[in-house]
Structures are given as structure tokens and as C-alpha cells.
Length: 299
Image (tube, rainbow, N blue to C red; front, side, top):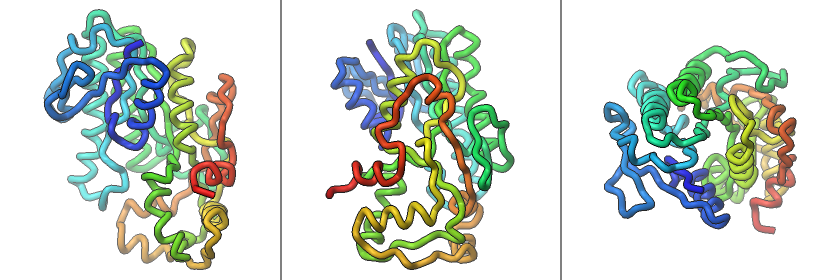
């Protein structure tokens, strides 16, 4: 099997590419620089048509599309929002169009998405049957998923996997939190009552592989652990796993002053459940936060 992967050097992409390769899959990396060999294909997501020759995807069995500018990479200025949109919506449309024009066309597109689709849900648990929420992120994710329509129209199986916060000791949110928590400077954010929908990196990769191999899987799937936690619960669990105190609190007003609109994502609450993934038969290696942290952090 030949699988093309965008953002293959990122947190999820590098882990997925390694897992695919170990299992005998040929991984074709979509790169934004000059390709270094036959295992790489150059593309420019910001160029017209993505700078991607459809012929480069001929003979590829599936594409896993992971690229997108970091959501928490800075204040959401008008310019930053434009970057967030183009790196997702325009890039996905370009890739889906190239897939549709390839001969033969890949049979599957697994496209990264996000639980931001649901907006803020408070204490209310939601699954894939819930409608789109309100706000910039919800609108962005809705348009991001819709951008894959050229692939769907060409008869390609399309899966939009709506990931929660991916936990990995070597990067992402957890990687940034570990240094202050190890110093005993862990802090609850705001009230601490807001829900965090998370998934371990191992389960994220396993779920993508599961959806890749499930011939009937199509449409949206939430990639979140079945037991979301509040920010206060997460803070206590991480402090316990590290054997350190975490008695501080970061006031909401301070976050909003420092980060602007993006602070709403830290203070907001999204309680998202993986209903379709579990119904399809996927088994989580890390279903609860203590099991996940125990597997991620050294004993």
C-alpha cells in the first residue's frame, strides 16, 4: 500500500509515518521544499492549485492530510485568521482537486479536522450528530471539511477526523506544560470547570490507521478519548503523575489580556465523545487521563 501524508514531519505526521512504515506501507511525504527523493512529492499549499501535479498522486492508494497553521500560534489578528483559513481551506481544496484529477485516483482521503466544529458546549456532551457551533473556529472547521468536496464528488472515500487535544510528552500542549509542572508551577486555568476533550498520540495514530483500513468509514469521526476531563481534573492528574503540587490558578482576565480572542479556546468548554469511532469497534489504549499520563510520562 502507498499512502501520501502531508505535514509528515509534525507531531502526528511523524508518528503516523513511522507506524505506517513499520507495518510495511510505503509512505510518500508531501513536502514544501524540493523533494529529496522518490519518497517525497513537492507541493505549495498557498500556490494556485496547490502547486501539486495530479500525476504525482497516480498510483497512491490513500492520502492523509494533516497540514494547517497552528491555531494557538499567536493572536487572532485579521491577518492571522487569513493564514489559518488558507492553510486549511485552500490547501484541502487544492489537494482534493488534485486527487480527483489523478489517474488512477487514490481511493481514500483522510483529512484532519478539529472538535472546534462544535463550538463551546459547556457541560453538554456532544457527538458527531451535533450541529456546527458558532464562532471563528466552528466556521473555519465547517469550511475546512467542505473543502474536500472535489474528492467526494469524484467517488473518493473521505473521512474528516475531528481531533481533540493530542497529548504527547514530546510536543503539543502537554509538551509545553511539562516544564512548569515539573517545577511545581502547574496552574488551573480560569474556573477550571471547562472541559478538555483529549486523546493520546498513540490512540490518535491508531484511530487514523483504523479509519484508513475501515472500508465503510466515511464522514466525520471524533478522535477524542471517551472520558473528557475538566481543566481542574487535568491539572490534578498531571501534577499527581509528576509527583508535584499544582495549587496555582491563572485568572481568566489575565489570559484574555495576554492572548486576546485565542484565550476563548483555553477558557471555553468542549465535551466531545467519540461515538462513531467506538460504534465502529475501535478500542482505546488510553481511555482515561491517568492511564494516558501513565503511558506518556516516565515512571
